[in-house]
Image (cartoon, rainbow, N blue to C red; front, side, top):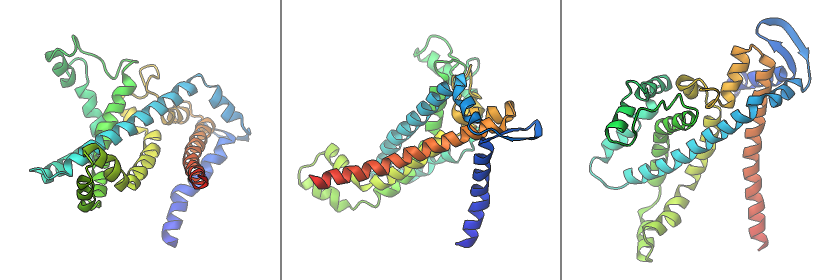
Length: 284
């Protein structure tokens, strides 16, 4: 394991230590000689930023809605493709296409499709009478964040489908037969056989995608760049703006550390909750 450990130290460990170190120092890309220790000053500036609360809220909405949407859609399509239907092999092959499309290509394609002047999305909605006139989905403060979230769900849910399919195929058919003989209907079989059978798969997917989605930068940047007027700006976009727009490495590192702490706290709460719950059940 030594080569892999050494590789991870250089790939993740050293940069992580550097970020933590920089978060306590005043550092700027325009002044390489600036490296003064400032303690918690960078963190205070981040929390005092008027956009921090807005961007934190956007990050929560972006992450929660994306993961819930991917979970629901992935479950529905995964269960459908697990049935013995004609052409399911072809459908299984086609469903992975959005996932393998590069993010840059997917983002630009959706930007063109949602364009209010020549986008096919608005054209179809107007022709079918669902809307009266074209909507600037990515340029409207009320719709930008949810539109980008929808695009992210479209691209990511195939990964859930493939993973859920693998979990479903590990459930013995005997369990479904026994449940049917006992009088369990479709809904009862779903909650008592299917969900327990893929619980570990779903837990892993949820935890992975909470992290992946919350730190996602490229999809939002390609489609809206955090606009309009910061309506779709999340914390990763804010980190980029601090570092590459304001050239303030200290504040960008401080915000990065804040995100790390938030995610660590989130994943620490879940095991603690499970332990407390098990102890409560044991006491009963």
